[in-house]
Each structure stands twice: as structure tokens, then as C-alpha cells.
Length: 594
Image (tube, rainbow, N blue to C red; front, top):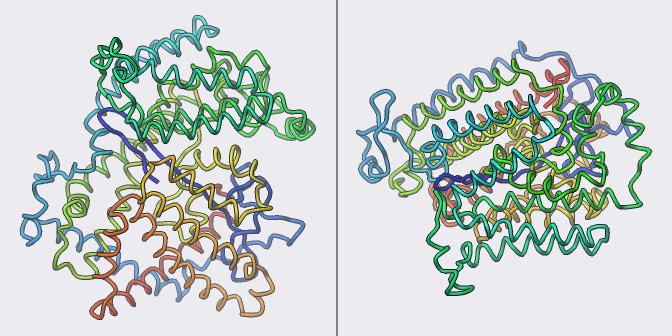
């Protein structure tokens, strides 16, 4: 899912995910049956959610990395992977006939003596303002750490003051609109937030604002009163404040529902106490911020912590305001006074190096592969099925990489300020074969928000097939209220349901033994190939070329001349999926958690 950075502002979006289980002598990673409280089930520690009562978890099979079967897969990858880049470099060369059709979208570059494809408005806005954002971040961190050392109790006030100054600079007088809208939500919560009616009004107000912002494009003071028209001229760096406000709506809902959980008599305190006693991190914690992430999210704060200052401090917190990652109110406030022990200087520095490496990789790709410009100008006339597929694939790859860079920048800023948030991108886009698992590793913080505040209140896994549609409808509306995004949301829901049903029926030891471990693994890999193709189509619709663009691309790929391409694609994806299966088994052997 995508994120949007427009004229100095960011808007990042969406995701959900799932897990796998393994069994048998020729184990294939499989999604277990959904457990209560998970949109796509995962254990609280991030490991696969396997129900022990239903079946014993078998150990992964011996490694197959050096088997003759896998040597054949390596050969396919060794031949196929360079071919992908040679194809993309070919139609991105100045000598290619289509170059003249899209060259106007290219800009002056700084790498390899080539131009750069800076035509993606979302990433271009972030890229063009990266130095300015870094300067603001450094200035903020210097002041914040000074406050934390000398007067930590004033940290909320400092953070709020800096946020108001920062947002005043980028949004101008529209800051007053933000404060008014969020103030209404605080009034609802502080008066009837202990009632279900209060929760319902918060949702109605928050979602209604999404539609109103889209319809009125941020509103104008002059439309309220001619005497206020002068405020419309007090503009900041980014006049489109409503683009980033979608994140604020999530925080508004989080605040209200966390407050409701505090006052609700149905809250199971015994579970929280049991976790505190059995979790090594929580049992040794002296302050709330030192607890594990799960305890910070689920454990309610004192009633006094749901104050007006904390509310606005949370909503407008500068490092996470523009793009996230999304953090719950309880988690944020718990860390504000007492930073978690898991954040270290070494870990933050290594994370910064990783971010810089990803940014340099993005620069290399933008200087050598011009698929965004080709997509925007539809300069693919005369392209072969293979070339058309590469336009689609590398567009999706760039979407994944740009979001990773944007989200990691702001997560790094938060880490440097000693606020721990969820890593949004936990697995490479090309290392996913399941539609359900895919959304677990894409915008992970949003997925966890959806689980806590939407999926579980709607009934969780008891109504899984019904809940998936309203959940992804909300995700689509939250991204952007458009036919393209609604089509994407409903397509994802439709693509997930068949996989869910098949796994409910066939993901068990009985079928594995009936078909034979090897046959079972190959059938599963074939189904995974179909999943990958469907996922690519859905995301091209939602975040790249739209419905009409996908129809045109598919028409050129799946024709009489594309039979060889389709067969080759299946073989290549089948080989890649087998490697993914074995990688999941290797993660299990080593105890790695994704």
C-alpha cells in the first residue's frame, strides 16, 4: 500500500498480514486456522500462530539447499534474474524507440551520467525535501534530548510546542482547522467516551471527516465568513493539510478506543497480570515504558494520562505525524515519560546505515530503470509481453522501496527520540507468495491498528469471511476515496478468500500424507504462483496504472504471442516459490522471527 508525500507532506498507507505453519517430512509453510483477535493470525511475539491443541508442530525438514531439485531452481534464477534487469535497462536506454515518448518526464541526474526518473510525485516530494526534513529532525532531536536530560516531566509540553510551530510552518492557518476537528473528538471522548455511543460517534466523526476533507479539499475560511477570508492567505509550505490528516484520524480513534478500554468493565485484568508475571521484559520493568510492546499497547494507563495535553502531543508528534509508523495512544504515552530499554545508540546507528543503503539503491534504480515515466505516459506501444510485465513488476518494486525508505526515515527519527514503533516493511516484496501473508509484512503498524480497533471489535475470526470486506473497504477509503482504490480493496478481499478457504480445508497433515509430501509441496507452489500473479494485478490497479491500465497491459501480455512468456513466467515463479518455502523452513530452524 502506498504512502503520499505531497509538497513537503507525507501520507503513507495500509496493510495486513498472516502467518504459516509447518509439518511433515517435506514441510511447506502453511497458514494456520485463524485465531481470535487477529486479522491475519500472528502470535504476540511475531512468530507463527500455531494452535498447539489442534495439531503438534512438526520440526522443519532437513535442508534441501544442496539437493539436485534445488540446483535446477538455482539455474532458473541465475538465468532469469539478470534477464529482468537487462530487459528493463533495454527499454530505459536512450536508443530505445519509446525513449522519446517519455523522456520529458526525466530530470537531470547525478549518477552514472544518466537522467533520473523523479516523476513519481509522492517520492519526488520526499526526495526533494529530504535535506530539509533531516535538518528539522536534527534540530528537534537536539532540543528534545536536552529537555529529556534536564526536565523529563516537561517533555510532553516541549513536544506539543514544537509540533504546533512545525505544523504552523507547513500548514499555515490550516493548523486551526486541525485543532478544531481533533478538539471535537476530544470533547466526544471526555464526555461520553466511556459509553459505546462515544466510540460510535468517534468512528462516525473520524470517517466522516475523511469524506468531508475529500469533498471540500480542506475547506476555506472565506466560505464560513467573508471576514475570515484573510486567513486563507496565511499558507504554509504545504497547503494540502488534509492529505496527511488521514493519519490523524487513526490516532483520534486510537485515543478514544483506548480510553473506552480503560473504563470498560469487560476488560480482562487477569490476562494482563498473567502476562506481566510471565514476560521477562515486563516482570523486570519498573516503569510502563520499559514493558514489552504488547503490554504497552494492551495495558491501560492511569485515567489522568488521558489528558488534553497528552492527547494533542500524541496526535501531533512531529517525528511520526507525516507518515507514521502508526502507534497506539497507550503505547506512545507509556514511552513518553519512560523510554523503552530496547532502543540503543548502536541499534539506532545501524538502522540509519540500513536506511542510507536503501536510499542509495533507490537512486541507482531511478537512474537506470525508467518504468515510472513509461507508466505515466503509457509509452509501451510495441513492447513484448516480457517487457510489459517488467514495466508492471518494477513499478511495484519501486513502490515497495519508496515506502520502505519513507517509513524508515520517520521511524528512525522516532528511534533517535527514544520512541519505539513497529517496522512497517518486514519482508521483501519479492519474498511473498501468499496474499494473506503479504499484508502482514506490508505496513505492519497499520495492520496491527486494524486488528486492535476494527477486526476484533467486529467479531474477529468468528466472522472472518464477513469482516475482511469492511476492513479492506475502510483501508481503501482511508487511502483515497476513489474508484481505483475501492476496486483494489475489494479485489484484495476476493483474492484472499479463496486462499483462506483452501487453507482451511487442505492445510493439514491428512492431505499432506494423502498426496505425499513432495506432491503436496508442488501443488502448493503452483497455487502460490497464481497468488503472486493476482497480488501483482491488484496492486497495479490500486497503486500504479489503475483498472484501464491493467486491462491494457494484460491484453498485451496474455495473447497468442505470449504463450511462451506465460509458460516461462510460471516456471520462474514456481522456482522462486520453492526457494521461499525453503527460506521459511530455514527461518524456523534458526528461530528467526519475521
